[in-house]
Image (spheres, rainbow, N blue to C red):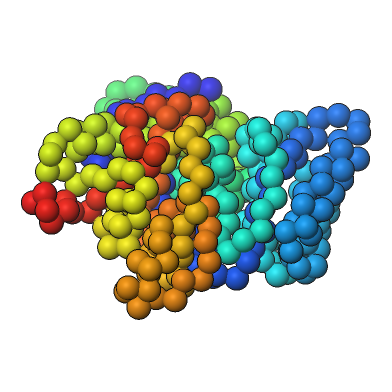
Length: 396
């Protein structure tokens, strides 16, 4: 599978949009977060999974987790989906609901189970970025098929949303010669181009409707290129062509799904690099819209000033942060919350508080540091930084 990427200037992307986590972070009732080895690559995989789960369950029981939450988790782990080969898994549960259940590319270095008012989401975000909505198109001279990669489930297949068959004129060039032959060739060419323009218009609509940041073009090479040329500016900005041997045949296409996955990872990497480049530019200016360190970033979150939260997963942060019912009301001292008329709910680990506040304010997220998705970036105080929506008043 070869992906031909047509780079465009993406500008300053907001990258991982944390709003998809808001329903996990808004309530302040306790929840369980579990990271475990979900590998299914040996004869005794089922037995090993039961033992690993029992360790996590015992840990949660000791922390005070209720029976309904534990039973919901057990049902998901032992009677739910199975991984293929090595894999990790993260689950968040509250009561009898499991609103987050996702496989991870690798087993966790440190399996864990935590019980508290804010879920532990940073390990997941360091391994697996936000699902990127992708509009996928298979096109040939007869028309096209538009599919939508489900952004809510990393394990879901692409979902067919629209098919388009070309005009009922000749769609294959005919043998012959002379003027009539040339006229027929011209007619078929016009029909083909008209078909592709129609598919392009439908793709443009889907991109607007879904907010997709990736458009994957597959199918016959000449139609693919013509489709790319006919896309609107927004769609073309995110378009990637993939060489794909299959013809339109519905969503059950492992080869295409693998190509979409690769294209999504590449697009995510490009966005991350763009964010890090912007961070370097802003941090170098004395009047830049930039904050670093736990306390300044907490203050920016309280002001709903944070556009992108940046965390270095390689830096250990042991601080506890007070939170209140509004997700952006976070502070190192409870007096800071009481001073603005809030009733502090509890203390939570700093990373959980930062991500809860970022998700609640519509901020994005970017890993810093090395490893799977951090792509390095500049060192920052406490391994915590933020790109701001506006420069601090004192610096303007």
